Length: 105
Image (cartoon, rainbow, N blue to C red; front, side, top):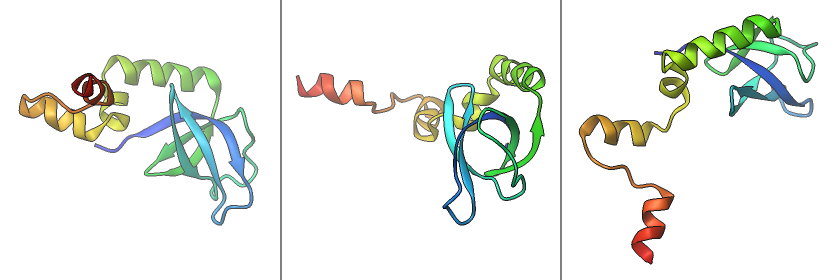
């Protein structure tokens, strides 16, 4: 599933073509295209769908949506590690940095 997820604009790269920004989705940060919102500013909240910021959102609505998405496990589904999720679904342990380090010791 691909959600339209609210996030906070952390930084903007005006030199990029297309214009992009780093968006914080409740602790997970991803780059998104900001071309559809040319006057968006750092600190504002936007709704991002398939890598494009589509509209502004007030902070209260954004926080409420993020909380609900987290409670429903949708943030993990949308932003979690796909390899780890696949391993878990297959019933095998995923290889993580921690497990690699413990094997080396």
